[in-house]
Length: 270
Image 1 (cartoon, rainbow, N blue to C red):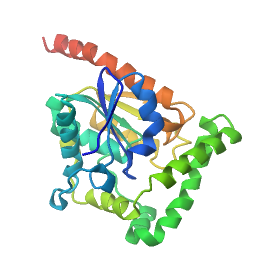
Image 2: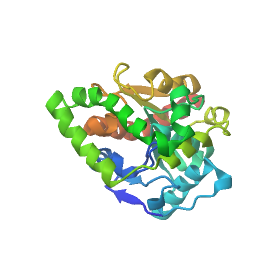
Image 3: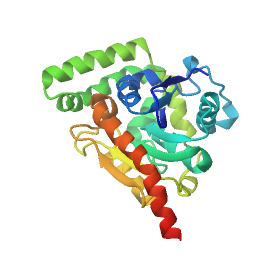
Image 4: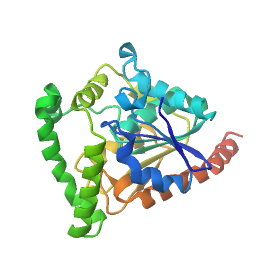
């Protein structure tokens, strides 16, 4: 498996979103690697990932991939951080493998109760044919880019750079559609509710996330009432890459607080 391992300190596994490519998270990886040890990869069914993918295992392939990555770098546990679709992967892994999870972070993530709406169902029905529509729909993200980069000019510069990344590291509409369908046969909420690790939920601003409504990500608070909630100002769904330093500070601060949280829980139990 192809693993990106950068930085030093507290290990953080960074799981990409439904497009599957770790390269799309490059600004977040760079910013976080200045504060923590970042381990990331492309999702297991991406041809570039070098990971095994068992069709029969479905969504569990992504959980196994995190386990394999931790084994490969010799880390007994790590903070598991997932963005968007990757947030659901991170949450599922944290609940399934508590001994390997020192903490979990979900970022603008779909919750386990999420179901595709009519627009998504239309896009995944014939993903190759509808991929131009997906690209056109992505234009709705420009407002967030402009706000995050403090103006039209900054938004255009960021959008051009991100487009270059997307072109160089192309997504597969077919694989994205399959990842949505993998959730249809999964009953993840009961499992995720068993989480005992420290948890952080990160969102953008309500009016700027045009992909996963903030209210959906906040549904994790219902499942994990003990979790912390944080927001990246002037961001929406793309806060981890439009405002990477702010994202990295939230992650690093949470990572540094975990020993204190554990001590507090021990005192409560005693």
